[in-house]
Length: 114
Image (cartoon, rainbow, N blue to C red; front, side, top):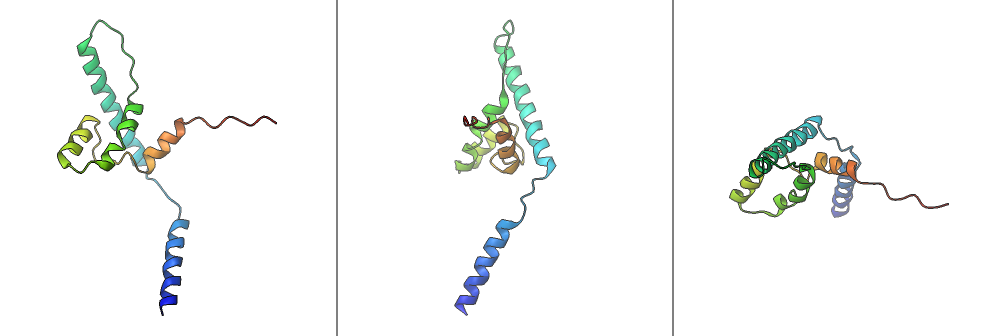
């Protein structure tokens, strides 16, 4: 009986890993929209501090740098403040869509010489 249960459990675990992992399209659009809002807010603040200077910002790397913090924070008030600052509503920046978006910007390893 224990053997049958163990085999069934192993089968269930392996079968779940064989299922395709799908990421809804709305997750990508939510990440892009929240990052755009954060970028506009950041640009507004930087421009207000120095209106006579030119400013270039790239909010996506800042979002990706702070995203792992959300997994480690246990204080809901702090988590709420980070989510509010980055305009993250109900999205998880450490889940599938954000990881795929991050991977799109990584450079492939250099080709090996032949």
